[in-house]
Length: 463
Ligand code: S3P
Image 1 (spheres, helix red, strand yellow):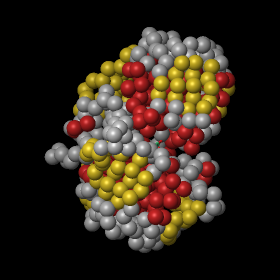
Image 2: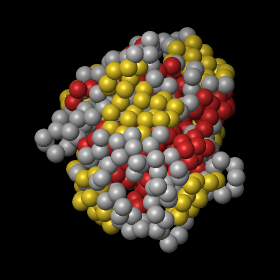
Image 3: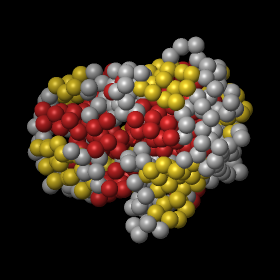
Image 4: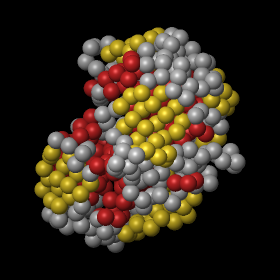
């Protein structure tokens, strides 16, 4: 994949369905009774891995492209797969499915590609073991392959060191099968799609948020409504609101059954991020991005863009038919540096590579800290971003928990390696449009993981 400097970007784009919500719709649909009909399911490699895993456990899933029909068999309806379950490149599949498998009455081995086999799994192995699960790393290195033998589980009260929706969700899913209440506390609220969708499917999940003094209150994480879709209407007006600064605890009660339902997946804000930043960074540009999910536990990038002086407008905001969504209009802007830290980090963790690249085009310094999680994503995103931005002439320094970017230097094209990380590949496609000369991205086919039509969509906007 090669890109050269472009003079402007103009037009409209509709990004594919949200990856996190797509995974959950098939997982929860598989263990619910009845049919779950999913619209706008992400047809990227990661979400296809989730479909394949549940098919191997006896669930009939019709993938019609525009709609996915999951014929769920209830909490106890999965059957032992004949072979190893392959989660591909997907951390979400590996970690969330482990929570479900911990409670089944069969044994199973989970594996994935070379990247998955390096990603930390102790973070789910520890809490699931405390619940009574038998889960071991086959190579003894705390990574996949994982061998899981289902057991009777009990509820726990667990405090996670990291704000991770994958850890939280694995524990909540195991909690559906436990003999009592399960509580999981994280340092800051991470994305709450599991809580919203589990409630919509009939589970009992609530969230307690602590303020800076440690006082707890209930957070709006669920809202079933009469239209047969799901969402959280009472957080529709929250995207501009700061993320709660204290710890968050999700509490789930054991369930007797979940009930399948209609799920309308909003566009993925993590994919929209590439067009948001491209529109801000490229002169004379204006892009309308349609139907983007703006759940506040995911929409931190909108706050950061505003902090940096970026021109974005939310249009057609609605919450009635699912999670809150909006169209986002973005125009080229002169940006200035900012500090990105603390509670906002989990709400934009996947967007940080693109934000770091955009900060090279801002005046002044941008500091990203409290983001050590970047080191254990599909690649070590602190190292890879630092290496690639430096190759393009940027002034950046890697830190243990983030990156410091001194903006304002013009970038030049270079050969950059995606390290088979889809978000790195897309970040450098956009950066290449704003750099002098040619930028070549090695291993760019990995965009298939979350956004198969990315290159076509981006090239269509070049004027
Ligand atoms: C995800 C949670 C995040 C995110 C990942 C998807 C999810 O990971 O980075 O792309 O769907 O729950 P962590 O839970 O590890 O932070």
